[in-house]
Image (cartoon, rainbow, N blue to C red; front, top):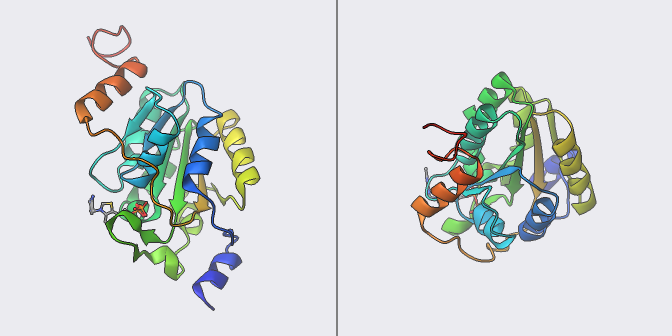
Length: 210
Ligand SMILES: Cc1ncc(C[n+]2csc(CCOP(=O)(O)OP(=O)(O)O)c2C)c(N)n1
């Protein structure tokens, strides 16, 4: 069985979608939800989809979007939190999926953008290009509500129900190999401060530590 046949057998969509288009569709449905963009292209396209102060842009380390989003979701159970991560990055941090399943925050949605490559470092193939299935892995880790979105309309429906109903949930999408549209501004202190203020967690904001 070829890698693509394996993917089809697991319900993974055959037609790759655009990360920027999907990110825009997602951001278009948001109000005060927090979004954590993973390293590189996921946060470059999050940046391109609109500069929300509730967005946190992870710079530098692979695999941290889900752990950061988990922390925010646990700290603010009244707020929906979304992690956007690439396949290479989540493969580096699979233990986070088991921790999410174990702690089971009802307000957490994980979106995995699977292009089958480590795109930003030169397009080397990841294990998902050879049969590793992120949804099967997430289910095995204990996130029962894990599914592939087969097209844009299904992705939108799945995001809408994740924003309304209880999680944790994981949506995986197969995407093409278009690079991120722009680069995130590299000012980590400002990105952090803006996000903390938007979360009401900046000292002096009244909601966070004094
Ligand atoms: C811990 C760690 N290892 C390696 C790197 C180098 N690196 C940065 S981005 C990247 C590839 C990311 O791949 P993926 O998450 O699939 O996103 P894509 O580039 O395909 O959008 C690599 C290897 C890093 N930044 N951090």
